[in-house]
Length: 73
Image 1 (tube, helix red, strand yellow):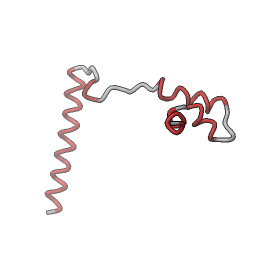
Image 2: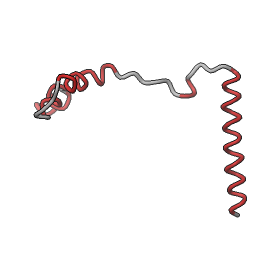
Image 3: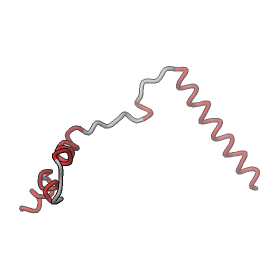
Image 4: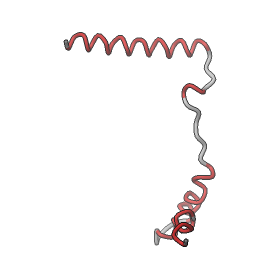
């Protein structure tokens, strides 16, 4: 039972390192609490022109990959 508490306790994680600073302790304690996930590329609010530009770049990459594959064969 103590091992479960140890694994989940951020303070214990910081204490395992014999020489730690207050910065390391705070980082360890609040890392999970303050972690903010950035939205995925599909979830961003993009303008129509930006979406078209991304699609154009994607098509250029696909076209160049197909041309390279065709040259190899």
